[in-house]
Amino acid sequence: MTLSRRRVVVTQRFFDDAAIAYLESAGCEVVIADLPPGQADGGLDHDSLAAVLTGAQGWIVGHARVTRFLLMALPHLAVIARRGVGYERVDLEAATELGRVVTIAAGGNDASVADQAIGMMIALGRRFREAQAQMNAGSWSILMGADLYRKRVGVIGLGRIGRSVVQRLSGFEAEVLVATARPEPYYAARTGVRYVEAETLLAQSDYVTLHAPLTPATRHMIDAAAIERMRPGAVLINTARGGLVSDRDLLAALEEIGRASCRERV
Image (cartoon, rainbow, N blue to C red; front, side, top):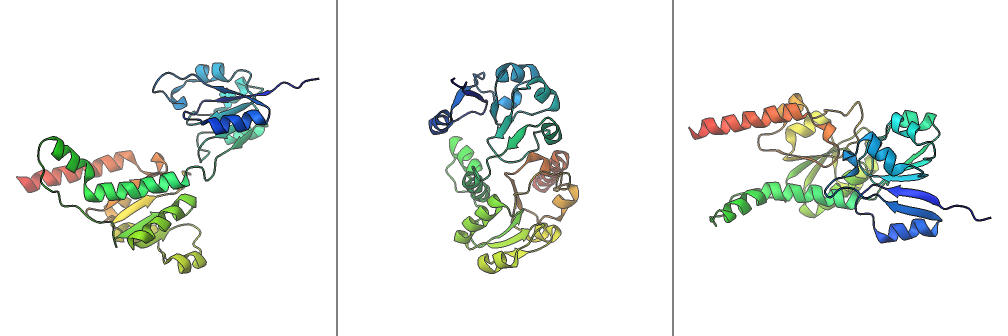
C-alpha cells in the first residue's frame, strides 16, 4: 500500500527551491499558494485562507493570523510553521487545545535583521535619504551628518538578533549599553557591553535599537515617557515588532519636533 503524500501549503512569499526539494524528499507534496501580485498572506481573510488550506496537513505561514476559528475550520491541519520568529500572530491556546503543532524558524533571519539595524543607523546618521532627495533636486551640496563610529548605542533585548547587532557594533568601536531581563556577566566581560536599566539607556544613548519580543510586558515600552527620556537628536530603530512602540506617542513627539523646528526658523 502506498501512503499518500502529506500536503504542505506555503503562503509565505520567496520560498526557495532548496526548501521545496527538502520537503519533497521527506514525502511532502508542496503547494505554493497563488497570491495576488503584491499581496502577502497577512492580507488574506478567513475564507480565503480556509480555501487555500483545505486538505493541508502542514502550513508554512508568513504574517497571516492563525485564529481559533481558522484552526477549527481546518481539522486536518496538524503543523503550523512560521517562516519567521514570534508567536504573537498565532492563537497558541487554541492550537494546544486542538492538538496542533506550532513552530518558528529561530535563527533564520538573525543576520539579515542585524544588518538592517546597523544599516538604518548609518543611513539615518549620515542622512542618506535627504542627500539623495537633494541631489535629485539638482543640489550637490554636502549635508552634515553623524558617524556611528564610537557613538553610544543602546540595545534593548539581548536575544540572537540583539547579540548579532552587538557583534557588528564592535567594528565601529561603539560603546554599547544593554537593557535585558537576563543580564549575563560573562557575556559583558567578553564583549565589553554595559548592563543598565532601560531608563538609563534611553537617557544616555545616541542610538536606541529594539530587539525585544512582543509580550504584554513589552507592548508600548516606548511610550511618551520613554521618548521624553531620550536625548535630543537620538535615533530610534525598531526592527523587532511594531507593537513595542506607541504609534500615537511617537507621532505626537515627531509633530512637536516639527513645530519646534518651524518656530526656530521664524
